Image 1: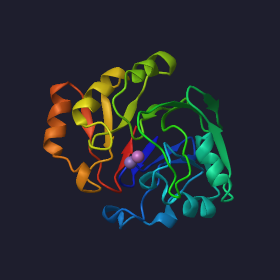
Image 2: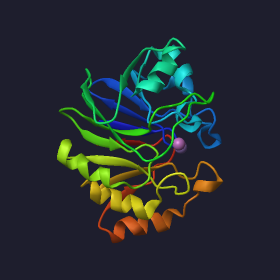
Image 3: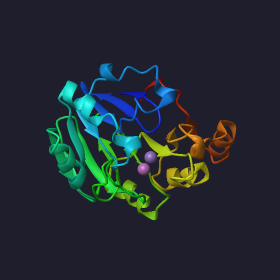
Length: 226
Ligand code: NI
Ligand code: MN
């Protein structure tokens, strides 16, 4: 399985020959100006919530690639009105897709679409197949609901957690989140894109190392293998 970081909270996952794309926000991210948004492969676009910094490039990418949107009912309906195909879910539900199983899980945040339409409740995803199992937390506070994930899903190979603080949990809580989901391999996101979420990378690395966990603070364009 290959993971590619496109900046902010946007990741591409290649598994079993399928391309999944999470929370595409590229053209609005100055730090990601080297990424060619029209070259990103996508069979499915998974959206954690409706905020602009997670959905900005969905339409552009889906119209080119034909990718199907996977998110909550409200967000899938909103993109459906723009002519995009989708698969609606809601909290606690899971579905078996051709690339693997997706479970839509709790996130503590807010969710409104760019035009002010109600975006349903924000969520995260656990995705698994024969090759890999991972958790994409989305924008969220630390929540005790995360403790349900190891009880309901296969053992995680890695988890993608926000660490930038202010709009989501900060890195100290991400360390606890890694405990809650029983996974010591963390890929960090939602940091450094704008002023409110700038982090001290050495501090973050030290906090994870002190807790006996590994954290990757990916650079934009970086590819990781799991
Ligand atoms: Ni948000
Ligand atoms: Mn966000």
